[in-house]
Length: 58
Length: 292
Image (cartoon, rainbow over all chains, first blue to last red; front, side, top):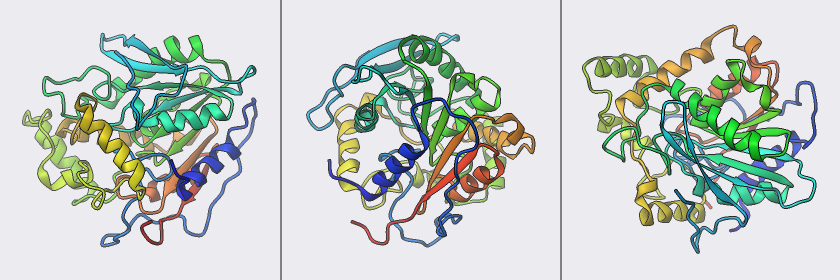
């Protein structure tokens, strides 16, 4: 299976957050400028719900 | 019960299926893969989304084991290889989301904590994120070290009517005895995927084809659109997320990941939830500029 840029982002976030050892405290928050919008009505962006992980149905 | 091992979707080596029975008698399919390293980093418990099945996560299972984790996965009641709740097996039905907590409990006790090395981390997608958040808010999440929630279902994404109308309509139809009926056609477009071109789930044609082929070849693993009762139960599950005391009840560190072009769940609701919680972080995966 080919590399997928959105899947790669998921795995990078996963690796940064899951340390594999017991930790305490609030994790760092990443908040890119693109955050905070739902797909707008009429937006023809084709996909997204499972792009971070796998094709899913919800 | 078994796990499919297919040329186009090979099962990661060393895994086994585990048959469970929830406290109310519903039979569930679970799976466990041991770590491939002598000193595992812990166990990842996977909680899938609505209408998914363990086989869809094989690629992810491989990714997680390559990182040194053991992996456990569960098919929720009513889907995948677990018992259906209606005589019409393709209908995606649940009477109340609280019933999923029974699935978590037996999976936790009989699979994750029995076979998996600690610490335990959760990876939950969509509806799975909704259910595990509810579990954590109930005070039962002491067994979970951290959680990663991809596109958790906290609210509907793009739907053809307001949430208030959905709430009223679902309650009315359930009151009229239609809870086990499929949702009206106007709402099915977001829930039933027929072709890649109109799918709201992924931009990746290869992974889309793999999942579509799996369900075409093995339709017993598939379910279709949710029932009216499922929608009613989903709306009721969302009441918790509006509770102003929720941040006090959710103490488990978690990372939420939202997708920029998501039409199934509300990315804005996910980001807002992450901002409310003391222990949550948020990562946004932007929408693709063009289809690849």
